[in-house]
Amino acid sequence: MSWREANAVDWGGPVSRAFFERPTEEMALRLLGAVLVRESADGLTAGRIVELEMYRGPGDKAAHSFGGRRTARTQVMFGPPGYAYVYLIYGMYYCLNVVTAAEGSPEAVLIRALEPLTGISVMAGRRQMAEPRTVSEATRLTAGPGRLARAFAIDKTANGHPLWRPPLYIAEGGAVEPQSVARGPRVNIGYAEEARDYPWRFWIKDNPFVSRP
DNA sequence: GAGTTGATCACT
DNA sequence: GTGATCAACTCT
Image (tube, rainbow, N blue to C red; front, side, top):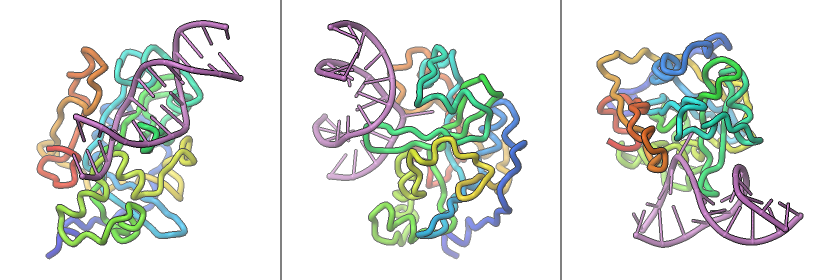
């Protein structure tokens, strides 16, 4: 059995808007194992969320909304939950976040890695890679926030998109057992002083599509 | 370890 | 408006 078949999971339609109405940490744990679906003229892609990070608003030095900073970029984080917050990093890569917490609380969850489920060749094409033949090749598709955004054709036009609506939405996947969830410090936030050490990154244990061990 | 470039911020 | 600095990353 190939890794694709072994990890195949059916997803239903989009979650309801109410799915997003819960505190950030609870939301993060619900999103782990959920499925991100992207419908596009050049193909359907879907992947299971296997790694993410919480960014928790005004008190979190690593968050764009630290100190209540509200700019054109961070605006959507201040709105109601369930919308996409997409920003450009290093002038090159887009990162996809799910806005969480109630309106006025600028919190979000960064989607850091997906396990590809559907549309592998579409993802490979967008990433300008040959079709992967092994798990280790396939991890290059979607292991990392910049990579998955590219593979799913997510750019700034998706900023503010409601994630309970096609063509870009969350669907509930299989639940992840609590003992299969690992947590630790977030990645690449060396500037964030004490917040560097907060264990606000979650991933599925031993999943090869996590961006780093 | 270097590259890359739009967004942000501290100024005019 | 302008210019300097920065950055929740990726690839070699």
